[in-house]
Image (cartoon, rainbow, N blue to C red):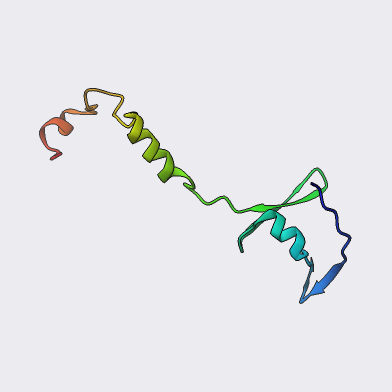
Length: 88
C-alpha cells in the first residue's frame, strides 16, 4: 500500500529538512542511518547498506553445501623466491 503525506520543508540550523511522519517510518522499518540520493529529479531515501552485509550467512550456506573449497588444486607460485625463501 502506498502512503502519501503532504509536509513542509523547514529550516534546521543553516540547512533545511523535512519531518518524516512516524507512520511512514514504521512502514519502512529504517534504522538510524539512511542514504539520500537524487535520482531523476526525485529525492530517494533508503537504508544504508553496510559493506559485507549478509556475507556471514552466505559463507554459512557455502559451508553447508560444501562449496567453500579452493578452486585451484595447486597453489600458484609467482617466482623461485616463493618456492625457496617464503615460509608458508
